[in-house]
Length: 402
Image (cartoon, rainbow, N blue to C red):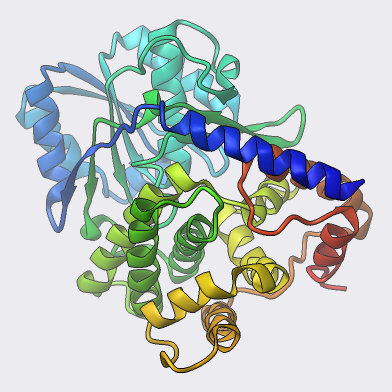
């Protein structure tokens, strides 16, 4: 029976591949390097905007991280309206609060400053504002009729790649699940990759968000929807992250490593926005919805387990990445190179204190997680090797702490 389902899922992915050719390939203008955040703030004025909703979190405001950007906006005659109610895994109620502020203040644009949570929330606010509908209405793919309100992004973590993607993830507290909004209309008009805003990021957040970006790159590279273009971005991202993440983790003030991570995260976003992701994200999303596990950490924990499961179908692809990252020699077999790459992922997790298992995971929740993860993966993602219910439960059992 499962083999028949696999044929159906593969046909579904073929249809998606054809459909994607007709979807506009929206991409932001990118400013990169130290001081680029202020340049972006100044550039917003060129678009003629007068009042911008700045979507961020209270800690970034308290630490003064956003101050140079705010001053840059004011210098161009733009009035900033700060909404700092963003929390990790933002809910629809958080988005609605920001939307109320946007409307009451009469903002004509949105600027997200922060991690993936701020950018995802800002995307849905901008989309709901222009379409004059509740945020919940945009769950799914290509639902909106009108473009989002003009949107700009300044990431303060090198991880989600949300500044370039056509996706946003919002938590539904009633269902304890994460809801996906996917539409090229929410790709920001412009983004700034400024390493100075990432210098004070704590080591553990640096590690988790960096492994999140690595997951994007790897899952895009092993995707059935991968193209020559997404492969180029994925290879570059993988190399930059593997060569720089541990340095950024150990020395947060290393601007060269921080900038490489910012670019690597961006390239990974460019790769997976077209090639999509896979089982790592499908499982990690359930951990986030059920246990509120930070998305980057969930991806980091799950990634090597999924690679071990899939390796017999992706040896050649992982071998490519191993050679790209100089983890082996051209004369070695594909299986040897692939295992060296997987071993590197395990080693990076260990070096940065990321566990092999998830403490929050409960044995009694595994059937529920399995059902939701497989549904998400099989109807959304072009995974290279399909797993059935028993295989997924076995993988999840390996993630149990006790």
